[in-house]
Length: 615
Image (cartoon, rainbow, N blue to C red; front, side, top):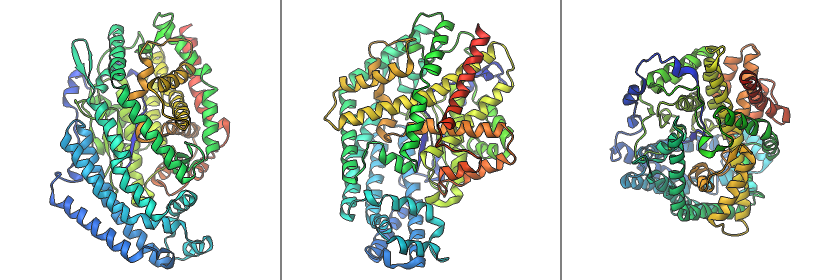
């Protein structure tokens, strides 16, 4: 199972001024909850136990038959073994998806947590039996491997996956050590991640005479009422500070765990393992990072100076960062209106894109309501290629929720299209996975912009798209800088809460700029960002995907012949092709700084228009 989420972002649009559903906030009473029966009907279904029994038996059988023999199998034998392993992976993905999505529904429920952990332990044992396969594939002699790949009976269809496995050869441990790593993960890294998730989901934030979940408190930071935003901001800080000893311990432990793994595997930097998994060169990420950092002043600092003027403030407080603009109406967006807007935008690009997205609405593949204990944020889970993805959002009827939904549906459409590649090759590197989601947001934004030719509503739309770019690109690169500095400092020894708070404030001041006054307590806001815990160095993928999507959108708007079908074929490719090869279909080269500057210039052009219309 692969989960792709949404960055901390806010986006607004004029759709609230064209509420075709007519239900307003009342439409939030009829939000869909997903139906997981396509995975398994219940936790104790006989089918789940039968699948576990088959996997346990199959993994032992394959281990006994082929351990230490992979290099001698020949082309046809290796192909058959990989196919057998793929069948196993399909069922394992299905089981873990069911367990994880059940847990995400209510992370406060100890029985759901126990069920997910029990599944994880059994899956770990199955994976332990299959460790030998990747290790031995990586060790096959290069000449012999090339002969196997050239054999028409061999596993050449899996070559992209096999090449990725072989790139890990310098970083592999012995078979016994790799098994040990898997065994320890359940009681080590996975347990700490579970502790983080249950801690965050169980937090309560007290203000306005009510208790709020994390999702609800963060949503209040976008309230039209400034005192409400202020109270939410201080409530967040108060609760984060109270939990800092535990969250600091979790962060230190996982950073040390990663550093230990990197040392044993021979990775030279904390980021290197992520780059290898993403199949992207460190130099390309460095070019992206430097290009974005150089844009801080031209985009973020400049925009927030404008926003302070619009709000009539000498300085923005941190609770004003996501504040609605004065001209922005307070009307809630109904679920049916959000659905219609997104599907109309997708259909205008390619009917197939909209047809796939519509299945998520029709078949209860989306879980939308906010609930106590529900996992905060948003994600699209690819589950298994036997089934279909599921989308989780926390929909509060704000314009940004529509864009978040469009983002996750972009992931979902991508996952559906890529599933034709099979379980192994459908897995898309993060840097490409975020492209489809950002592209989905852009389709929605462009549709709305075309309906708003001028006036204050257009200014609101433009301003909030700039904020979206800041949150998706500049803020995520600032997060990447935070992670980089934290992991580099952690190598020298354990970090205190004050140490981590200090690193956080360094990057926040650099990226947000002089328009802000930073409240006491904001230094703790690193505490709740899940990517730092779940997937170290994931965050640059948002900026990477945004840049790719903007470059692709520019080609689309230039009217490149056959773009729509070529783009859909790119999504269908999943992980079967390298991102550079896929982009070459559109004449794009991400190794050049100008490539990344193009997406940033888009935001600068929007700010230019905003300055002209508000002068």
